[in-house]
Length: 198
Image (cartoon, rainbow, N blue to C red):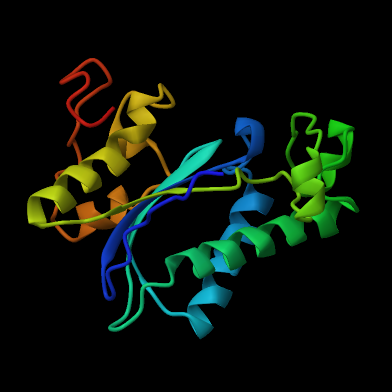
């Protein structure tokens, strides 16, 4: 089994990518967004962190957090957030991920069929999320700016909108209000193609 080496700087600023199981495109549905919002609020009560940027896409999300002084337990925070969202979905549907997508009408979205592996069953995972997540320790101001640009341009990169400001589930709008980005930043999906990330 591989050993994953993660950055563990206390009081660090981290970029994260978190993905749904089987890339199910459900994160932008209102009940899931609400469950995620509530889970984040609940976790921040006991394990505070600052949210510096966020974009929510149908099957994944990117964000930047700053952890408190002397704290590097971002994995614990993600574990609780993911578990709370999974429990909310399971509570709304009656099971972790039912094979019948019709049952997801209770949470206002359609899910692809998910067959849990033995490993997932053993760990009592719902299959709603991919097990792991990607993290990157922000090194300096330039690194932060690159990751902010990546986060905010991501909906255009994935073809969800042609203009950055057209995507509603993004901290871009807050950054515009604060004067850190102009409203027309990023142009359209054909402008500066590939300039904002992988």
